[in-house]
Every structure is written in C-alpha cells, then in structure tokens.
Length: 265
Image 1 (cartoon, helix red, strand yellow):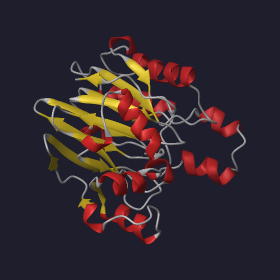
Image 2 (cartoon, one colour):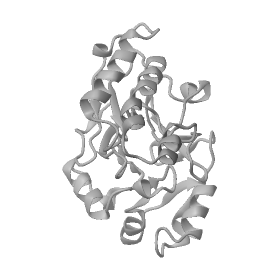
Image 3 (cartoon, helix red, strand yellow):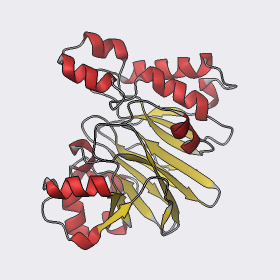
Image 4 (cartoon, helix red, strand yellow):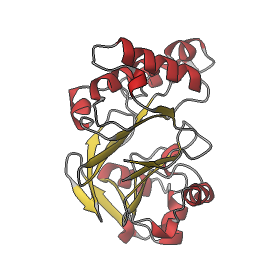
C-alpha cells in the first residue's frame, strides 16, 4: 500500500491511499488544480482515481470535490448525513447523482483491492467519520477532526502500519490567541479538534511494532506550529504509559501546502 498527504491543515485536506491497482483520495479540501498537481508529484493522475471518500462536509474537506467529480466522473463515498448536507446546501455545484455512494460507520466495504472501514468521530458536522484501509496484511488510517478519543477510536486504530492523526492546536496558543471565545470553545469542545497533547496520548495507545509511518496532520495555522506539535507529541509518547519512545518511529508533519513523500507500507 502507498500512503501520502497531498495537503493537510485547517485550510485544506487531501490524502492519497493506493495499491498497484486501486487509488483513492480521502477528502478533496483544496482546489482541483492543487489536487492534480499533488497527484502528479507522486506520479499519479486523477484519471486513475477509483473513488474520493469524504469524512465530512466542511469546506476544508470538500473544496475541490465538485470539480473533480464532474471532470473525471469519480465516485464519491460518504455517510448519508454528509451526502445529504452537501447536496441540500448545494456545496458541490451540479454533480451526477449516480456518482454518490452511501457508507455507514462500522460497515466494511470494498473499492478494488482496498477494504474500507468507516468509523465514527466526534465533530460538529452532520455525520462525520474517519477511515481505515486494508489490503492483505497491511492497514493504514486517516483520523482527523475529532474532538476527543475513546476506547472505540483506539480499537479502530490498533494494528496499523501507518497513520495520519490530527494534531490541530496547542492549547495555550489557542487560549491566549485572537480567536473569539465561542470559536475557542468550539475547538476545545468534544466536537472540536484534537490538541497536540491528546494526539500524543492517542498515539501512545495505538503504536505497535508494525508501525512504519506516523503523520501529524490538520495543524492549525493560527494556533500551532510544526516544531511545537512535534515536540509535544514526542514528549507525550516517550513519557506515556507505553513501551515505546518517540524515536522508535518515523514521525513527520503533514504539510498544508505541499505533498509528503509517498510512503510504502
């Protein structure tokens, strides 16, 4: 399996997962042009995409979806609540209704060589999910936009070979920053975003000997910076109640403006 962040951040998210014969995107929250450029950077082409899977309907996850679906006829998979909201609020422009496919949390389905398992996350959207992908013995997952994690989330992220996990904000930067009070409460709430500290604690529960790559994603431009996210997460892993140190794993930041290297697992 191949795994790559084309873009990840509060301004736009798009992740690639592929095999020899199946290629999908998780979200398309950047322009169609940027998605195409990102795919070309890893020697892929939007014409080769078998599906775009949408986590939820916020603009930083669907900005380029309408353009890509129309231009290339790419099937779109998401929950009923997400699809209904996107269509009722005309978020995508005119897209052929036959391209939409409804998925449900904890119901596994297949796209080509990929087995896909959506699972619930807590976020202020209609019916948000994260996704786990498997091909043979390999598994990767993308989990962002979650206000908190619990045993259910941990169980769905065990035994992975690679993961992109949200590390959205530094709590102190957010609290003393310029955001209005209501927005701070939204981000810090149970339907908001995962802090650097909680990202590190969650990773401490799911790291395993198979893990070949960890990406920290969806960093806030205003309330985080890369070095702080990395340092906080690494400290939580190393000091946490688990058998690992952060240096046992290759951890990188998924950048908002450029693709990561293509990771083979």
